[in-house]
Amino acid sequence: QVHLVESGGGLVQAGGSLRLSCAASGSIRSINTMGWYRQAPGKQRELVAAITSGGTTTYADSVKGRFTISRDNAKKSVYLQMNSLEPEDTAVYYCTCNINTGFRTRDYWGQGTQVTVSS
Image (tube, rainbow, N blue to C red; front, side, top):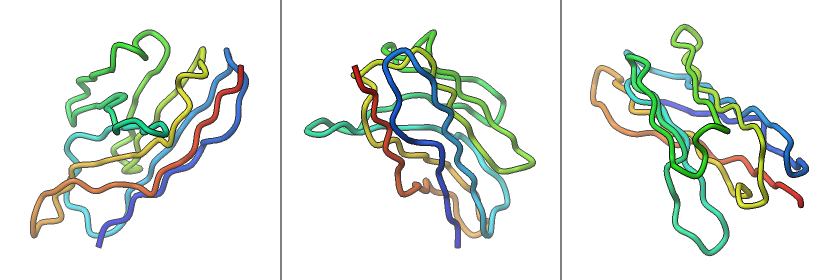
């Protein structure tokens, strides 16, 4: 069984910074793409950033230049450094990882962490 545990959310003023972390544990042979999605009230879940096993990154246009995604393969972890936060960034942020357990490969999701940016 695989588990993803997120941490680092909270309340911050506009212009501030937060760093989200997500650690995977369990029966893991390898981790492919890792990423972060977010869902604001009344809106669809959207991709924020993703990073492949080779280190290639993808960002939503709305966060380019402000957010940075990184991973630590030894720790089976992915991070999201969020700078210059805006009230529009308020959402529940979800970590997702495409994981090969040796039995199958599929996407796993964390439980979500709330990020609230006050104006």
